[in-house]
Image 1 (cartoon, protein in one colour):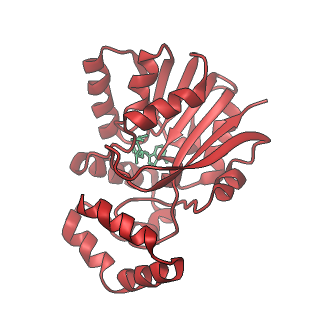
Image 2 (cartoon, rainbow, N blue to C red):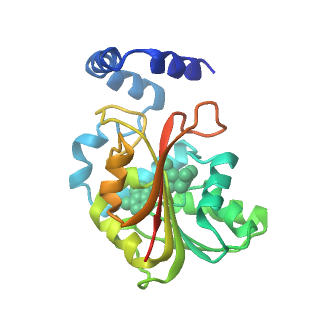
Length: 246
Ligand SMILES: C[S@@+](CC[C@H](N)C(=O)[O-])C[C@H]1O[C@@H](n2cnc3c(N)ncnc32)[C@H](O)[C@@H]1O
């Protein structure tokens, strides 16, 4: 509630003032505040060294993150928006499954769902959620940069609040475009780079054009969606990209 009021207040300020306040916060307070808020498991210097981490270190970091902080970014409204973006039921690969809701909504709507994530811990939570919901999901532990699926093997791919986490954006996008037959739906936060933030983001999309350039598809829809006051972890502007495969 207080955080939402703060977000609203901040959005009313001129951009130059917002960015000055943010620079002061980054320089003086942000690192210490994050350490205090999350404690030892949170890697406050993630953006300084993620590029040189091994795959095992990456997996361990996300396992720890899921162990200590349940991170559910997509609420019912977003899940419905994603379903609408997909179209007729078919096979769908959810990249960066986490523990979120889209898979459950998609399976309940008649899609055959396969879910991939790099965190064992997240997949374990997702397995339990699927079991409780009485739905079948095929789970895979894999990096988005190394998706082990054949060309055009899924009608759809969804990638929600995950593209901003990958180490290699180009490799990931290449796999998404290789594997999808009909449509790719991507949801990311609209964000400027900050060194100290309460997440492990590595890629930053501050305008729809950033996303359009990253996906580099001929046919697409792309727009900003606002999520302040939603029932989810992420509050703020998001970019929704729907890529139509040829
Ligand atoms: C913020 S969560 C989003 C989860 C879910 N899609 C949602 O919207 O609630 C990001 C997910 O990406 C996963 N992840 C991080 N790096 C990854 C990578 N390189 N390949 C695949 N998954 C990755 C994390 O384990 C985490 O589950």
